[in-house]
Image 1: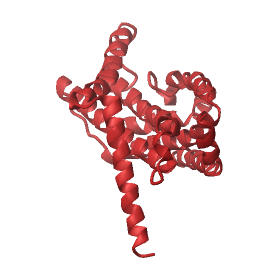
Image 2: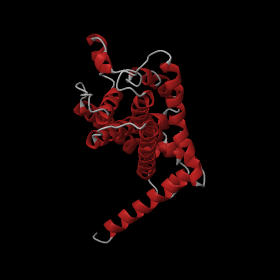
Image 3: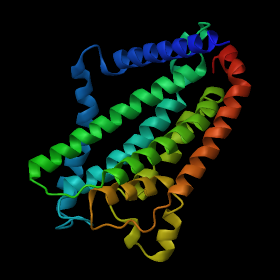
Image 4: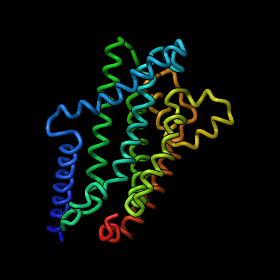
Length: 263
């Protein structure tokens, strides 16, 4: 037993690394230049929203720099959304490889989770650092709150992704249904505004959206004048754990059926 356990761990690590390298190759190309697109997407969105909304308001709801305000809203949301999508489609993406005896559905999920979380966090650091340098901003960053926001986004994306992994694998149409249901979150998560400043009835309603808590925590880490009084980390983590546990239970119970039927 003492020999087999380390060996299984080594096999797990090797398989996960192989799956990560495979996805890096297929998603971003075989050269580092492929990662330019991972940076170009959020930068393009920030530029567009900055130009459009600068004609509507003279200053953003927080601070005095539009690009920074949008970056601290869009990019945490993209971290959650990317993870939920990648984890949700992990089995379907790697289904051909899962026929090998040493490759399990958990390997596929963990590989996509690690790779995409690291990618989104690195892109966030590059984009935000670029904005700070380009505009000569002087900020008192709270790195603990920034990483707490990352933790919330990763937990939420993983929980939603695991639940969706079962649903998307068993019922392929759910991927399109979820895309439609998830789209309004982009507008109501506080990317373009502060949830704190809304009337009480609207604020209480939007606080049920866990993605809004992720963004509020991120902005609390970037802006030392923003208190984020309505952030609830226990709510986000509790919801994430429930969804993750439900997803894992269903995947463990039905993963053989998923593989046999090839949903």
